Amino acid sequence: MKAFNDLADFSNDEIAALLALANRLDEHPEPEALKGKVLSLLFLSPSLRTLASFQAAMVRLGGGSFVISPDMSIHGLETRPGIVMDGTAAEHIREAVPVIASYGDAIGIRAFAERKNLETDMAETEFSSLTDLIDTPYINMESAMGHPCQNLADWKTMDDLSIPSNGKFVLSWAYHPKALPLAVPASTLYTAARRGMDVTVLRPEGFELPGPIIEKSRAAAEAAGGSVIETDNRTEAMEGAQVIYAKSWSSTAHYGDRIADQKLRNGLESWCVDDPWFDNAADDCRFMHCLPVRRGVVVSESVLDGPRSVVIHEARNRMLAQMAVLYQMMGAGA
Ligand code: CP
Image (cartoon, rainbow, N blue to C red; front, side):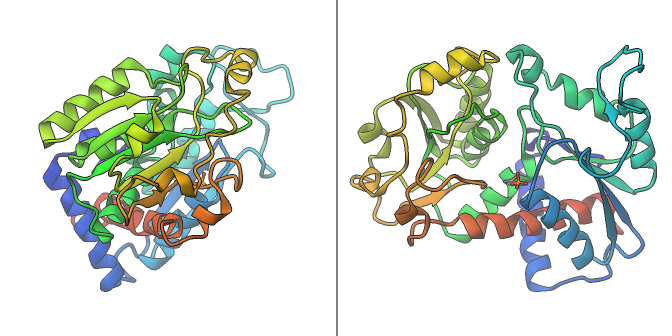
């Protein structure tokens, strides 16, 4: 495997093989599988789970890793192309990325969306500008529109919990005081669709997901026997739902315009997932979220701490899913 960037790059058989490998490595650890291998981890955006789970995954497979992020005591990093570096930054990303990559057998890169221009972010311009600098196998640890490690872990979580592959999946917008990236909602929608689920995107007006993301997911759902619809009607969306996956995201109607986005989200505080949301859902409807999550803002404490919530299971599956990816990328059969 040369890159783990988007589940769309993998066939159904390849995804099934990764999920089976994640289960096998959990049940039958292979502590020498990646002996002598090194994973470089470049975090240009913050993290808890991704940072910890990749390091844990490498240790469990017998390899090692190192982390570089701008808030460590490294030289100030310049990211702008074509710049005269007469300011404070002493190192350009054009040298830093290949140098970091050269120390490892694979590299993980996290670079969130700039959230200035929707087309630029949809085209993954920044992430591609980084991966274009290297020949080393790479893993997308969250880019402008993608979070494939989260997606694989979430797919595994639904399999673990025997949530039917043709079940009803609600991806719900939730209130958050800040405009957040589209990577998780966009790639989660695609993942549930690709799994063959009947997906409802529940969101207020102005927070529609971009057309190309809906179209890509709808095509994947139809190929797998599922469907994708969008609504702002919570009762209709939650009818018979087997999963509600909550996430806040930026207004696509006002992408890159912080003030207009803020105006639109003011008054939407009731979009906090709470017990009454489940009134007409399936009895065993699960609550999913990639974390971090704001208690009492995105989801009530009662739901988050209650039996429906599988957020810790999802987070542990990050490590297992990534072990499978690392094994295929750097292991003996790679
Ligand atoms: N879900 C997720 O990617 O968490 P972090 O941002 O903490 O890595």
